[in-house]
Image (tube, rainbow, N blue to C red; front, side):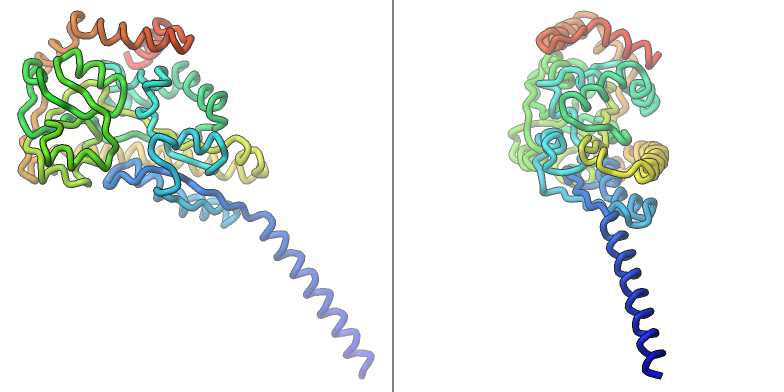
Length: 339
């Protein structure tokens, strides 16, 4: 009897050891990443950031756990953070980098990215390849998907519905391209952090802001502005989801495949979501008592006049030359892509 008990005990120990080994193996396979993003309430951008952790955990059966955090990095350090491995993933606002990386300015140049379809065409073109190569070489990162901010709209405390009404206005912009066109139309353009915009509007420091319509609504701009105008001046701006190359390379190939497949699904789903949000925003603004103005084709034709556009493009070409890039070739590629 003792002999049987001893044998049973040995079997139990062996099974326990095997179970412990299996548990350790599973634990060893589990990878944890941090994802940095900027808290911009109400945006498709934020929806993407908050959706990623749950979707990837489910798609990988818990092998990859991503924690999204909006306070790890400042908005203008999201590229450097993923480059340096401070976080494994980030959703950078590339518009913030257009002063130093003129390649990122292209979607904000008038007449190029004025719809989600335009943005998708840019992304799949040689221009998109060039941007992804820049992420890889300069920021040690790989693009897993691309989404977009809601249509860039001019929100103001006074009407700005004609070319003449830009003159003398002080406006906050979030990228180099919009700043150039605003200045050419006679406005003074300034850069402010997202948290500074609403107080600046309240105090009259600025009279307007060109920004994501969804964020402006979520941030409560309707409490201080009375006018909104849909100028088509680089209306749809991209935001990528990036992963640090070293973190990516450390994942097993089968896990990489799962992650890629899920991000492909996310990209397709959020393209639909973007269009839903963009379609509902004018009605929401009007319901909030804001005078939402659709800028006429005739007025846009005036903005696209060579005397206004050429100085904008000339300034951007100088930026590109300083960066050692061929502005003419890049512009042609971009405009051909969205024809």
